[in-house]
Length: 217
Image (cartoon, rainbow, N blue to C red):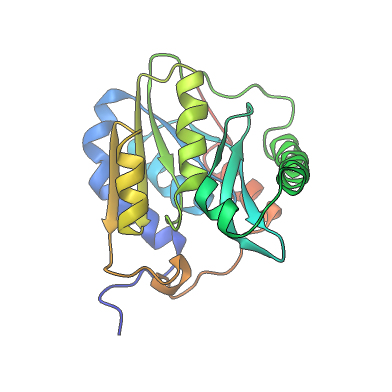
């Protein structure tokens, strides 16, 4: 029996928002990692009356098991690689390059679909709250942090409902703050901590962004 569960991503977002309310005075930008982070981030943006944007990040999965992340790439080109995992899996440079090319193409498709021809919200000198639905390896969020550093965010806060101890520790070295509501002894999988962890579609992402006007500066 798990010690605590979230009903769904929206429930997790409301709980997360309650802990993030003190940041409202900093007029932060909320940045959702699609797709799963969007339902969580919408609740945070509503509660903090903050602008919401997406930051597209794609996991670099192992051949034959894309859910096993060995790295990640974010829009803007920031990429991270878990070299030890890649080496253990025997991934060659050519395989990694092919994976990066494929995921970069999908990343561009998502940016075009979710944001259209609008520019991303400027984060220069601002506090940015990066919201995801959970941290397994944490590599996607690490790529997001580095992408936001390149865009000169003043302060970066990673906010997630649940995460592994290792990923929280890793991100704490690069983010200014990591807020994780649950850090279980063993994660097993992010989805296990939700009663409803159904996949989020492109259509759902667009509908959710519309709830908060898509974006505002």
